[in-house]
Length: 144
Image 1 (cartoon, rainbow, N blue to C red):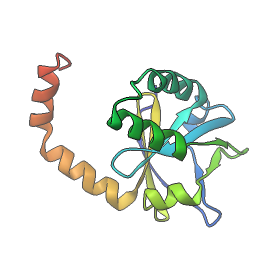
Image 2: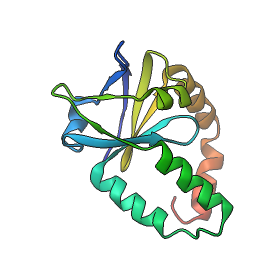
Image 3: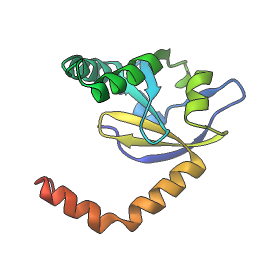
């Protein structure tokens, strides 16, 4: 399981180091793609394969599922982890997530999310203001 919050930076060659304690879950390859809320998703290969099976079962006739699948698949790229556990962030994804040099990597169950540090701080502050409302909605779903 991928959990935690890690402050990192993207170097001049657009490489991002995966937190050391999480690298073993990725092996030597991963999939990076567009995420939600203008962040990036980084999946271990096995988790990506599970997600692609689920996306492949969505109805093609529905515009919203078609759009979501297009964005996920067209934005996806297989990346290799180098000996230091770094991945290259493609320009189009760096631009999509508006990543500056300082980023935050967060573990979200089966994936990592890569956020621009300022954008993450703002998102987290807003979410923390709404924890009661979020908990109630989760309760309605029987999850909390």
